[in-house]
Length: 348
Image 1 (spheres, rainbow, N blue to C red):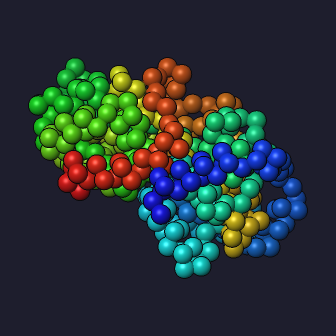
Image 2 (tube, helix red, strand yellow):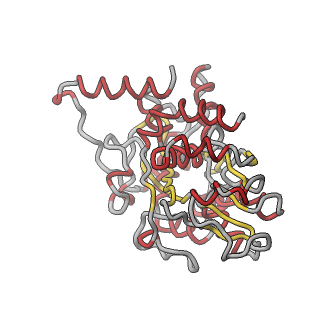
Image 3 (cartoon, rainbow, N blue to C red):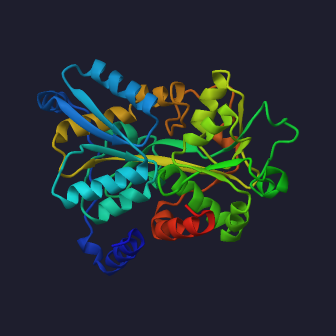
């Protein structure tokens, strides 16, 4: 069943359910010595993630150092690939994953509808993660965020000539000089493309496709094409990688488009049939800790909901930017349409 159809059914069921039948949201769970002991006894946690590989390797090693005896097995791929993998595994009655995180929160709407998630609310995150980024039934919550920014190669494009808006990308001078990631692979780009379609409309993408845009898979790929000079300007891509590469001396510069910059929250949850359920809960708690939240900013250049985290120097604060609002339910409802129309316009 397509994701959009599943979402419609979920909404209908929710509307028809008697109010008294709705379960109360689960209480938050403190991090206890008993949980640590049970997780250590399991000795293993398997994490499917779509976050940047270098960052998640650092997070995993930090967790292993803090909790000796628990090994983290990382499985990193694009969010949409992970979504397909879990569908295939569960369809074959294979329950391999403990913790899942995705840059496409609409994935969690489908997993929730299919009953694949276990309720768990780490006490540490209750005080700072906004309600709008927490499932009311405690099945998932936003632990990281990023922006999908435009960018340019500073050796190929002068700052005075760089585009400042999505509309500027339609100028004939950028024909054959643009690169864009694909919403069928990357959850970040799926979410960002949905936000752009909602704000700019499909006619914008029809015009953009005439600019002979280079298509790449991952949200991390556009900056690589800028660095090598294969393309001058990127339509999208993750802010964190552009910022990190810029900090390391690469000739790249992020652009926050005047129409608004797509905002993408990455969520995390525990699988109901997790083979290591206690280690899964301990690991999710660790992801929301101040220690990890500061790490994802310092090492990964991501954005954190934790107000005590110190922002990375040299980039604008979220409050100073015009942002496009993310909408996981809207993304889920339109995911199939986005893939079909995108393929129609860009031929891939």
